[in-house]
Length: 176
Image 1 (cartoon, rainbow, N blue to C red):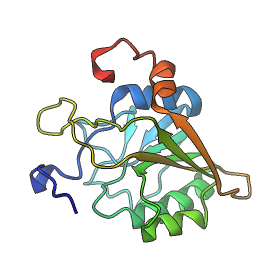
Image 2 (image 1 turned 135 degrees about the horizontal axis):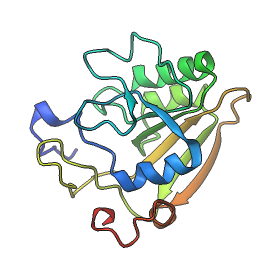
Image 3 (image 1 turned 30 degrees about the horizontal axis):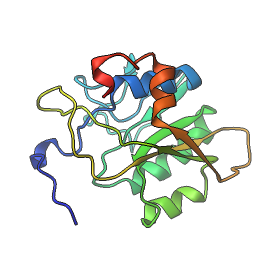
Image 4 (image 1 turned 180 degrees about the vertical axis):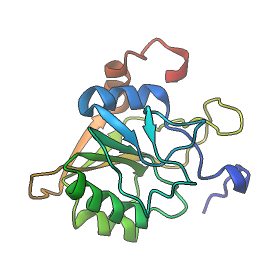
């Protein structure tokens, strides 16, 4: 197993790169960032650790974005399924691509789509420096819950290059 070089206090605070969020926002129209801080929120409306998103409703007037703390994804999967049904809004969660985990099996009980990001890894934004990090040891995938549909548990793929193009970040420095 690879050990993280990130200080323990920062490990669960890596930010989704803006280009990836922008590409997905153009598809879903996010209103709420369900796992954020004032420093890394990607939506005008967001829930912080102090608010405790796992015990509060994710009240939303649009789709919900969630890049959960990777140290314990399981409760976030359960909360996303619950809040998709309660809020009648899609929930999109960015997680490591690891179908061998218990949280992945739990997600399959309720998720509409598992979208694998192919052809490259995501470089997240370091919470201490605000700069993109390197050395992500796993690929990424999106878990997508949609209201008003019986979960299809469908698997799809999207190349990283297409997400870059959709975001308009192909020539931006933050896209590498």
